[in-house]
Image: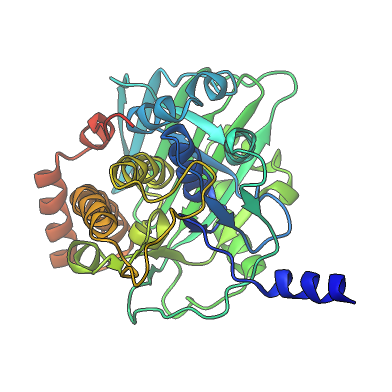
Length: 380
């Protein structure tokens, strides 16, 4: 009987860990790896019952590869995707095509999200991830999540015999429609097709949105229609809303409460227009681990260091470390969110004044993604 009582008491005993990461997505697992490489343990609590490998693909620019180098994952993931060597942009303006072709100055590859998540999970120390966890409550700040009126279909196109597009990223942009393809390897492409909803058509289900978006595909060159037809619907996603966090909130919001902070989409959710969401999350992981390691927030097993009697809940050095992380990431995240927001608004607004304002913002930011990719989050 005593054994049963002791077992019950042990089950009810509160666990104490130095670092607890809520969410086992890309940024959560990357942070656990970064902490481990700094000699710090952590516990990752994840709602799903298994590793979340859903989603389609992510473009990883040079800044993301710098972060992956720090996590020790770059060499392995490079073997899963070809280097992009050419970028073709076709803009349809008043019925005429304006085409530009350029060569990327820095490394960019398109990775399957499944490959990235599996690589992260394999590098996390054993017993770090706890699946099937439930959040009791979430205190959400009002107005932190907004949406842009844009329907997007994402998927893979398979070419068992090999595709003819080489290593070129290609995109066609019209007033209310865009389509693009990015080769992953010789046999697999990632594609996206997006379309602004017609007036009054913003609240529709995924099937209706998918049909509406793909109606435009038949008007494009035959190779585009063929690419979409090759997609396995089971591996495609349809988005009826593009979630983002307004750049002014990223610039002004408080990102620390006590010993709690945020990273990844929780800090800087952005539309897919600049392809930096995943890379920014990897940068967060490196910077957060570097900042926390200076405070000694956790021992090697992830449990909190022994606390002297009546110690304050948040040690000054831990709070200072989080503040350092927030200050560094706020500058970077605000710029990325502003860049993405300006492009997304330019694609969706019908107001000329707003379009001109977006063009002015993009001109100030440099007009393309090179400045985003040039960023270096530093060493662990």
